[in-house]
Image 1 (cartoon, one colour):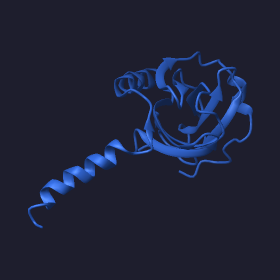
Image 2 (image 1 turned 60 degrees about the vertical axis):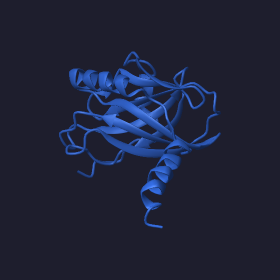
Image 3 (image 1 turned 45 degrees about the horizontal axis):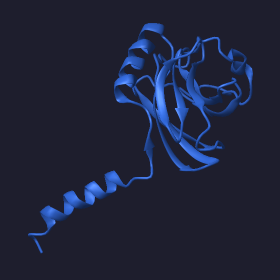
Length: 167
């Protein structure tokens, strides 16, 4: 039996990794470029999204890079919007992430079909939206793109909004 253990562990690990139901949807090289843009702009940027769940009931685990300094400057939400600029889902971030960069937070349920194209973007409490966002669908995956920071900027005053910053 001890002889089988070295062979079983790699086999089990590969099965878990290849058969996971999570969908990693952003290219890591594009994420690195996005991260560079974030530091130049001084704005929050979405660099990755992992999606799990089923149609009309997805969970997005979104990774954000932001130049947080505390409650005076921090990423206060990430959101999913359609290509027309309508808010589909917003995940409020209740505190700054000064010592945790980049950071990932899940949100949902996100009620979209597998083929619905959306943008995933982040917002800074004192500077607004970043231009480096992810665009795509659950079905086709997501790509890092540049989106005008003024696109659907009126959503910055739409509910839900953060009540306060904890730290």
